Image 1 (cartoon, rainbow, N blue to C red):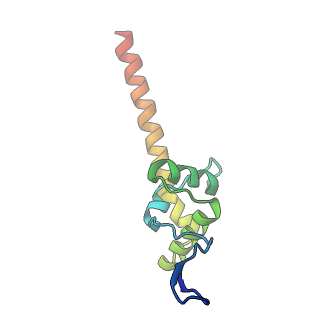
Image 2 (spheres, helix red, strand yellow):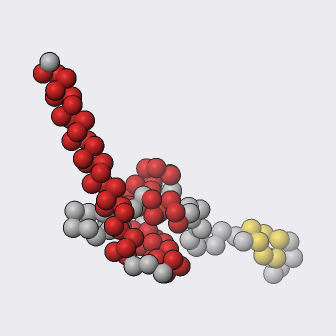
Length: 109
């Protein structure tokens, strides 16, 4: 923050010490969302994923607020939002099981 000095009148720069604006889109936050086995979102683990993938350090509360804001803007519920994410994970697990069985069959021959 730049302010004029009350004594000399020169412009001086002061670090406000406040929070910095996080430059990450809501769609990236939503795409990185981690859902637990019980079907509930895991905010802190999602924050860790965001840090690993995008290099932006955020907290679980930031993730939760961004997702809630997205839901409010699009007039959908959390449950409606999570259904495709959970389905995508199940498809990934099925593909993994199929690949493992194919590897076992190839190793057996």
